[in-house]
Image (cartoon, rainbow, N blue to C red; front, side, top):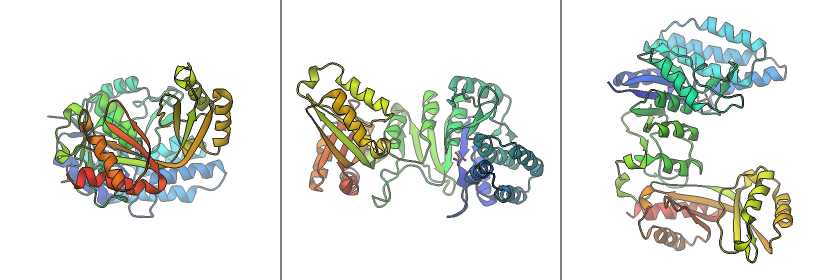
Length: 442
Ligand code: ASP
């Protein structure tokens, strides 16, 4: 028998109806032995996610405001599910314990974690699987950084005792036993850690879309679905803003070479998107050279010119030092003989542009500085682009024909992506032009 780890996101476990679909999916394949669940998410547009309500309780507690009504909404939702599913897990006792803890003003992480905790107890009873709490298995250090090897060992030891289990996503604890959560959407990471520990054949991530699309559907009409994508390609795309999977979930799965399969609970027949190592990508996505296109707007480019810069030692180090002092992440650093351009997101820069420019002037003594604002970056990604001549020519030609002026070009030597900077106003037009050339016309 094989082993599959299946993680179900908030919308897949939002109520009795969704949980019934979830159960059918799990029972369809006996390999689905380890299940990770999120807290119940939205049931309909405008509904509340349990996690949001729990954080809201914490905010009320902090401001000495009554939180009872909010917690009651949480309690009612779980009670309704317990009745709908026809299980009895003594929810009232669990609720009373949480209410007691709320009176002691516990941490936001503790409160938020109860969403997954209660849900996993309910789902375990519904499936007839063991409930395995992750509180002492997912280990963080005191700074809140995941201790990946310690977690792996703890999960391995515990899961060896369970043939089938349901685990709550999103949280673990620090060495003193205090509950610590990942960032939002972090149940994806729990699933990946479990998949690695158990050496799963596949890590299924069940959500409400059938995987990744080649481009943003708000920009490109009916973009094609990505059948297979490598971990690396996904990193290049997620970095630009794709949001189906928490990006920190890729690392543990990749370490153990466990493929991740994004699936849709509302359309279980669809095979979704498979994320694997490059060497294992077994589909050519319909013979297409590119795998996906992603981008975002609002970057600022600061171009520094200095005669003989290339022979001045430490110039780039000093640029990085200044960015470090201001705690600003840069996105790209394209350079030529006497120029270096620093590409930063407007968000990272905040209102500190003038200050940063002054620091550049004083500490780098450049001959001149140019600032270009409102730049959008677009990444065209595909491991099949590697060693294939003519790909960039085709891309630039498409942009030229669409009358998009390219302000910046950056290609990593891995040749897996080509990044172009265009003006914000040309962003959508540029993405459509690239998509049409590489997908529609092929
Ligand atoms: N429930 C948490 C959130 O809403 C974690 C998760 O669903 O992955 O962010």
